[in-house]
Amino acid sequence: MLLWREAAKFGVVGGLGWFIDNGIYTLLWHGPMADSTIKARVVSTVVATIFSWFANRYWTFRHRRSERPWKEFVLFLIMNGIGLGIVVACQFVSRYVLGFTTFGADFIAGGVVGLILGTIFRFLAYRYFVFSQDQPAPVGDLVPESVVAAEEGLAARV
Image (cartoon, rainbow, N blue to C red):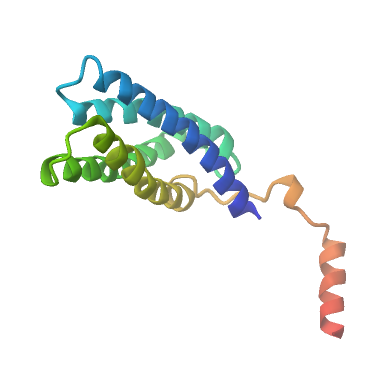
């Protein structure tokens, strides 16, 4: 149950991050960074990453965070750097290997394909490496010991 709740919250944060990332990228692509689309993607992803750090630390994985936020932040940046590498690699291959140079091609390669692959990596990395502090289950997940004992007793009789 906790895994699904974390995945749902991660999805909400990711969706908002996607709008931030691609919104800024669109503005930069059509404006001051029209000649540097890879750099525009890096800038937009860095801004979305800062948002994502706060949202994931204080909402998605709030029950897993440690008392050492700087350690988590460094790990978060490393994992996001790898995730950014996945996004940029997809866009790089599309643009410089396959020769697709339109905004739509960049958007699909980096903002869709790269983002999907990077998101899968990030969720697993955040859950198992960044916000991996073992914490007690949230209050809603606690089951009284008497209920657990009764269920065990019932299972033993069956």
